[in-house]
Image (cartoon, rainbow, N blue to C red):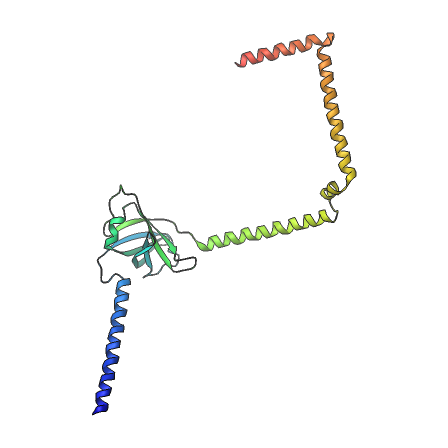
Length: 232
């Protein structure tokens, strides 16, 4: 008799714990799917859902406010996504708001983020069609980053080869940097060029005062002044 009573008590405890666990599970699932709260629906048309699934979260300003209820392919370039949103959020979502598919973290689950519109627009209504934005494709970004890294590696390798040749005395740049004779010749050439320029200026000044060429230079000056007046 005592054994039967003990078994019944243990069975009752297990049943009670099972009911509590079942009720808790139903509550959390219902809370996540907005089964116990007032909701409204909006729809967005995307070209690519990028792995979005039914049940994924919908966020507004970084807060979970709904879930994806259905995903339907309309055509080869259009996918219709229905979202179930908490009614309390509707007053913050305007008709010119937009939706974009993103991810929770860098590699997390796909979500839909609603970008707020401007306050001068009306509040969105049930079953309204919301504007959508083209989502950023992480794969495309990673491919571009890889290409950039590969190019940087090639440039670094080529630069290392050039520096190695310079250090070993190979190539024109190395000779220019290390050969003092070439540097001295370049310096002399620049000095001679300055002297030649100075001599040319002196010769031109002397020619202006020459009796035979003075008239020529005065004519040139008059033509220059006339050209300036015509421009004015």
